Figure 1 (cartoon, rainbow, N blue to C red):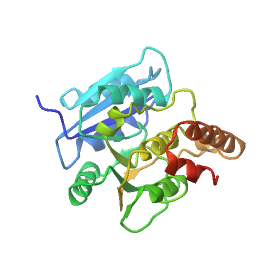
Figure 2: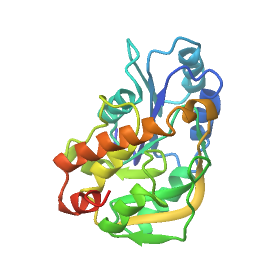
Figure 3: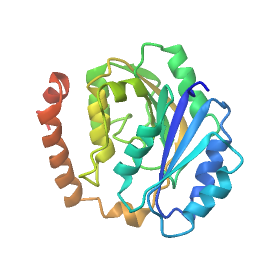
Figure 4: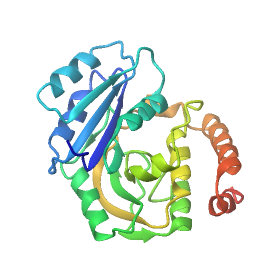
Length: 244
């Protein structure tokens, strides 16, 4: 059996209210050449039962179950390790996507085959709209920092070969800005990025949980992230970070 075009990793922990809409939106994609790897991070509610019911008739969906709760970075890493697709996307278990989420990424890569990353627009958290554009590496880094690209994992379509060749993983030792750290690390190996402004991802803003990250915790996490990046990153990224 040949590898799918897309792998979609869905980390899920206690998503009783939301996992149905998330997985249903993926089942309704306008293209069919994909796999979905759902990582149940040892949920204590009925998330696992809902997942089993939702995917039982669809062999594109697979489940990995953690025996203890390890956090979202570990869940994403487990999903990445099992992925086989050419392209890799992430969808959080409490979010949902438009039917053309994957098709939109595919069209962007077909239109700009030299791209190593495609970014889509999104609804919700810190959405910074902009026109369709191709970013070079320096522009990409600036826009991951503060701009249209952002530090999220879920509005991006990565080339999985780049991730595997450079052994990229989410840092399981931090629990905030872990996706921005991953985005910066990936940017080390990207020369051309296609930004496509159509909003195909719905981020579910849960005010109370996100509020705890605003203020001192954010700046403390950001200082830690920048320190890690300066130790390991290539020249272009280090030059940008030196200005932070």
